[in-house]
Each structure stands twice: as C-alpha cells, then as structure tokens.
Length: 150
Image (cartoon, rainbow, N blue to C red; front, top):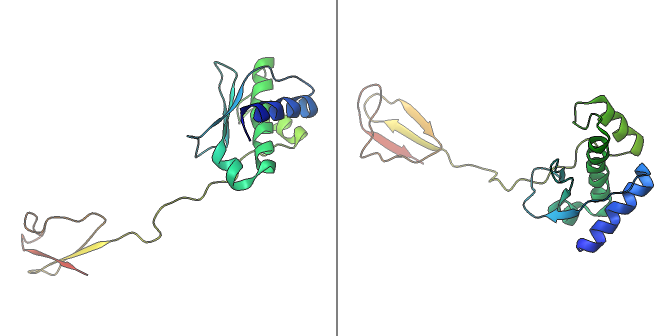
C-alpha cells in the first residue's frame, strides 16, 4: 500500500464510520514499533505503523485507523480525546475501534547467558548477566580469587 492508497483509505473510513471528513495527512512511519499508530496534536496528522500492516494485514490497519480517527475527531471538536476520557471510550465502542493494537513479537533472546563465579576461598557463588574480569575483581566477603564456572 502506498501513500495515496493509505490517504484514500483513511478518508473513506472517516466518512463512513464518523460521518466527517479527514482533512489532514495520513502516512506510514516505519520507526513505529511499540504502537500501531499515533495522532499528532500539533499538525493533526496521523502516522501508522507499517510493520503492523505487513504482519497483521488490512483488517488490523483499519482498526488502528479508526482508533486514531477517534483521537482526531474528538480533539478537533474540543472533547476528551485521551485514552482515559469517557468521550474517547464511548466513541471507540460506537465505531467498533480497538482500544489497543496487537503487540509485535519481540526479538529478544530466549535464553540469556548467566555467568556464575565461585570464590576459591569461601565458596560464595556470584551470578551475573555480564562477564567480569576475574584478574581484577575479588570476592566481596573474603577477598579470595574468583573462578568462572560453566
């Protein structure tokens, strides 16, 4: 979907679901990861996550557009446009917009490496996420040498 098609889609959803025109710009923002879209108060433009569209399809995108249009129309009317406002929640329910979008999968490692160090004198065990220099650091209890266990 390119810029013109997205703009046309947002305008059609605005007319059909809200009965009001969308007179500003809608665009994809490839940097959006944590949110599906955002309404910018100063410019009244709407930015949408391209990643959500690619992963979940047009149905998810339409839900995100409806959500952002709720912010848009309520803000222009001077009503409560924030997530906690009653006007916003009622309009979401009326147009069938989701309160939250589906989360993207995180690319975090499933198993993080945990380093285990044991003091050679008192056998105190240290567990660390980061590797430490055992030539430089000693046991905090007895000042004994540390060894890395696997």
